[in-house]
Image 1 (cartoon, rainbow, N blue to C red):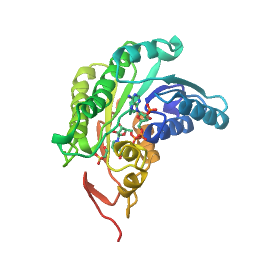
Image 2: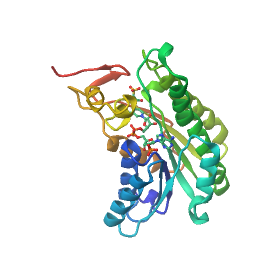
Image 3: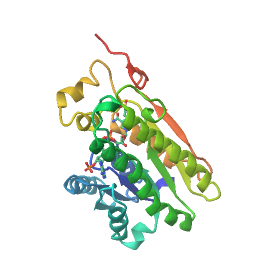
Length: 262
Ligand code: NDP
Ligand code: 8X3
């Protein structure tokens, strides 16, 4: 995958799940030459991942950045704090930070849950894109990979606001295609189905048993499955843009239908 060499890759939500696996995949694919910027709120986890990757890939250049994507000023200040050799040369942005809170009818969704989901999944994605896309246009190179969801294609019962937020990611991805088509910048979206990460534990406010029951009797995707797709999409030749992909475990048929062994 020599196309990924010397690329600077900026990943949001790299402290867990899909984002963490994505960092590992880029480190592997970049064969020591890729520069990776790991961002999330939990800096201790990012630092531990950085140490681990540096042990395995000796010459790798990894930056960790404490970043809460929900506030534009945080995003702008955090990116401004990076060395200019890093922030001015970001080739790949993986807009992955996101979450769901609860699984409740719309009538029971709290204002706080609404704000957290929308601020993270929609506004956060917008703020990070606003900070990085102009630099990509200026350098005549860049690829934004948004992590959407099957929930951005299909709404399901008790998922109204999360589904709304992921439909927004779908809409933003489509709009950006028009806004970047006269530039070399590519915009892609990956829409996973069930991926066994900390996603369900966060959804159910730390109830691990409830989270595990989501994946009972079937084999879900894991973060690496999505990470491999991300590095594949990012390593196509510059004239090829894989715009959208819907990825399910083999035992899943739609957002809420999966075959479970008895
Ligand atoms: P995880 O909970 O394992 O990871 C979520 C990541 O998002 C963490 O690194 C977390 O880091 C980060 N994050 C959450 N809030 C913020 C914030 N305010 N600012 C910055 N980072 C934040 O879940 P996944 O890996 O599964 O989720 C990654 C993406 O994949 C999300 O967008 C999710 O919607 C999407 N997705 C997940 C699916 C699944 O079944 N797991 C299916 C379809 C899509 P920290 O808490 O340290 O800030
Ligand atoms: C995450 C998968 O099914 O909870 O986007 O919407 S689901």
